Length: 219
Image: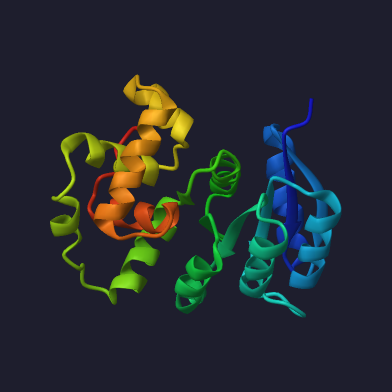
């Protein structure tokens, strides 16, 4: 039985080799193809139809951001997990707009990539802890916006759901943690997205991090 099917794209062979070694050792993930450019990534996704594409931002021929935009159009069933560095902060909002499902730090804990893959494969959003702070700081220009005021409009249960979403849990996992059916979680999220005026799970996850709603020990 194979694990989550993944296409990995990074223009640095050593980085690809390191990530693949971690994923192979952990199990539960099958790297079906590797590419060195954004264009190769798109072509490989179309050829192999993986559940997740792990893309570096800076690649020749077609950047990871442009590849993400194209993949959301031609392969919407493939979730995109972006590899970012501290130097890539200026690209974060573009990646959000392009439809990336998560961000992990390229030079951080390699196991964050594993956790991110499983999260976005399950339909969740994922921000590794270090990246989450960088994303929040970048999108708010440094000082915090009045995010707590926005989340204050939520009920305690909705804030709990938002915190679990921000921790990278899928709808099914949130439902199990709260002992409710998955349909109830979907109703909560619809209300949360409307009240917070967010378009997707990643934007909601960012607000959850900024409002300090992430549980210390997610279930």
